[in-house]
Length: 124
Image (cartoon, rainbow, N blue to C red; front, side, top):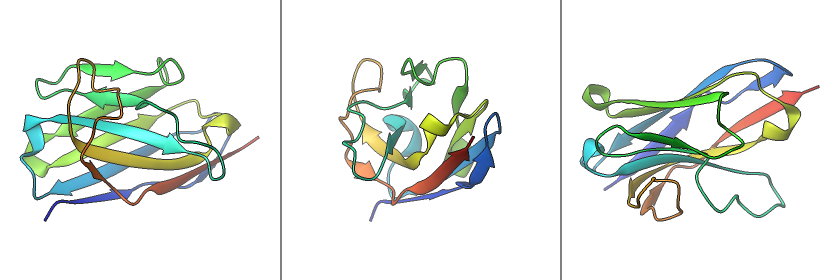
């Protein structure tokens, strides 16, 4: 059984930072794309990942994340991370990790497994 468990979401002020974690079990962690998505309640989920990392460790970012967010992984711990810096109110959303993905940049929505989400709230 594949399980993904996110943590690290919190309420922060404009310009603050957070580090999200996602522990993945039940799937070969380093064999597929891993990614982070986000969704604002009542708004359609952004079609692509905001950050993705390939099986060989190549990282990709949506324009909204470039320069502020960093995706990384620890294969020994089966854990995916997303460092969020210089947060803005428009980053407020539920952040989801995803595993078992594929695609040239790992930013597409082609993922088989999803976590339950962790809330990030940024106040101005």
